Amino acid sequence: MGELQEKLRLLPDNPGVYVMLDKDGVVIYVGKARVLKNRVRQYFHASAKPEKVAAMVEHIADFYYIITQTEIDALALENNLIKKYKPKYNILLKDDKTYPYIKVHTKEEYPRVSITRKIKKDGKYFGPFMGGVRCGDILDIVGSVYNVRTCATAIGEKPKKPCLAYHLGRCLAPCAHTCTKEEYTERVKAAISFLDGNYESTETLLREKMLRFAENEEFELAMEYREKLNMLSKLKLKRIPSLNRALDADVISLKTNYLYSAINVLVTRSGIMQGSSNFALEDCSFTEADALTAFMIQYYSSHELPQEIITEEYCEKALLEKYFLDKFGKKVEIIHAKQGVKKQLFEMAQKNAAEYLSKSIDKIKHKDDMTKNACQRLKELLGLKKYPKRMECYDISNVSGVDKVGSMVVFIDGEADKNSYRRFKIKTVEGANDYASHQEMMRRRLAKLGTAEEERFPKPDLMIIDGGKGQLSAIKEIFDEYGIEDIELISLAEREEEVFTLFSPESIRLDRRDYALKMLQRIRDEAHRFAITYFRSLHSKRNLASVLLEIEGIGKKKRMALMEKFGTIDKIMSASVEDLTKADGIGEELAKKIYTYFKEEI
Image (cartoon, rainbow, N blue to C red):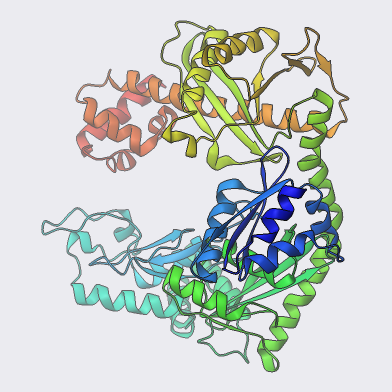
């Protein structure tokens, strides 16, 4: 403790980021501070602390800090370090649900519309669409009413053959030069007006088309347009009459019991209530303002920034506004509404957050038992040297030694980190040799350690092999080959769910109800699923390639085009002539030849 006290005495007055470490040197918390000296010392004062903070402080064995020029810089660095280390006691939004948007590709000469979940700076976005409204339905109206294209076909000087969408009256087919640029531009403007929430003219056009089809006794088409009108009615019901139609705002409220917190986000675009999302949080911030700031930074790294954020009075308004301007180049106004419809929206968010917190506490506790607590229990049951924060599990999949593949899945604090998953195509092993395949995969994995690639492939605390004692011994040989001593290694045999370690010739059998075993089963099953998925993909593509070689007129280039377009032989076998012509380089004559070949095979 003497060393810590000396470090605390020497803390500077500058803004910066502090990083808390446990006795194993694992990062357990990252925070930012306007004045490092004041903030970090708070953790070690004898004064009363929130329960969650007190629990975290018990595990602090050391800390370090990084001085920044401004608090804005500290905020950005804090976010980057949280993403890098995934600390146990920070807010971590796990790849939280992102909602779809409709994008108008305004940078293109003939703009198209598409559905996306990623926001960039290369177009105009509408949404997010949530609460029972499907993006596909909206896109359907854009196509059938305004005939704006949805495909990415290149438009050049030479006209192309119009596709099915043109013949169905869903696209003006600028690629076929069937309209002028001016005509198409007008349609795009009208579509943007509709997406902006001006539904009246769209409703009129839909009703006219419905009545016309009904008069012509084309009742199926009339019913189709009636469904479109019903969907439009759903959108209109989401409009808040007393709210300014130009208002794009998120309404964010945080409720806490100082152990757990919940946040509700209401999303309003063009005066229309799109829907809401709830988030359960665990965080060791000293103040609610810190927790709210940490949430917003992570949330808006994957969601569109609105023009306005209506939120709690204690929000770090100036800091966040400056951060969003610097980071995203967008001016966002953060307010606390005190009257009118905005206040009513905020009160709605408060109620939603409070209700979600009361209903979610048991779920959060159960999640803790299944993840972090299970990791701690696994450490104790297996006598591991340290808490297994990063676990990697490996599996092999093949049939009769063909298309051998391996998988690596990663769990952090007992939860899947899918961005870190990796696949291996086994290259050097002949036949179905499971041990040798595991060894090749492990050599390739361990070769990353101590290189520049370790940043992308951090050293795990625990490696889990799907298999029994034989697989464990095979991997131990590779550990010895690379001189690995600071990574724990176990295997899990599926039939009896036995755990094998390097410390005992006997297996360890965990109680089948124990959360530690359930966690091991989850990670093993996930590795198996991931390997099988990759194997099926490779196997399907290999079979597809060999079958296509038998068709006259298909060389390597056309085979690759078909593989890229359809992916599996089943999809090619069931494709129509028209579908086949959509693959690059496949003309109608060749498409008929492919179609006939597979019909004869069937």
